[in-house]
Length: 359
Image (cartoon, rainbow, N blue to C red; front, side, top):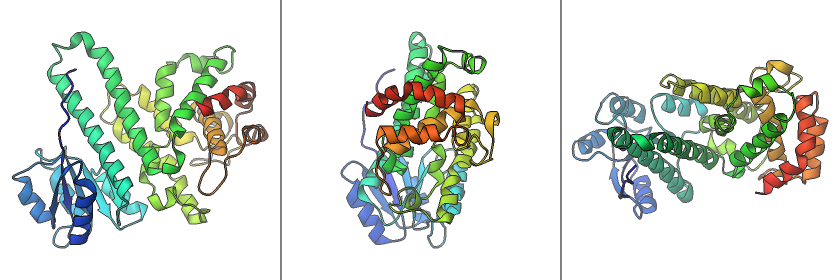
């Protein structure tokens, strides 16, 4: 694939608050052409002259709010593919889910956190670039047929990496978590391949494909408020219930992707990771309270990988535990939190887990 020359991207920032417009322009104008617009009506006038790469759209505006504006954008073939990021002071998950269901790609809270704003825009610009590269590839399919398989694989991997980077950008306390859990899963599968443990199930999996799909296990965190994801103190009961919903949100998001996908194997793995990695062997987990073998093997494997990594990682609300303490907690969770057979495998591999956590 021919590399698309990097170009300076154009952003619309649409907000009826002049101060917010000026702040956003100050933060972003070094890297982008920033056009500030005081209303949705003026945005549609400007769209007749310039089609931006990304639109940052305020929700609460007089005359026409952001929800009504995005409905018009997504109904117009000229603008439907322009990514829309809502900017809002609203902090409830219902508002965010409403925006995502209407076609928004992300939410950014006001007042702006400069570094977070820059990172969010950077991620979405990267995604747009990859889509343009994919479009260019398809238009030149005949000429590039010999490179097709390799380039599609690389492109998919890049897009998946970018999406998961966005998830970790939302939850900035868990940096590197996705890559580490992938490494733990590889160790599990390699060790299980040496025995008959769950052999029939594991033999059906293409290992690399299976492990890659695990990157989406926390995708549902995209629907959780920043104030909860990055809270530095203990969550309230209500806040914990909200963050628990990320498992169900992840399943819903993946199912929406599946509607337009032809090969669903990767996404089926991803959905099981997202929806069942917080289930517990004794049935006390969430979101469905599955018990024992009712929990898909994907969820049982990720349960150990996810908990181990959380235990050894520092968070604003807790210290990182030493490896040996984390191992004891996993072992204690046999028959309650975790599949006892998989705990046996983990105990054989705990030294390798420690090495993988540091790589």
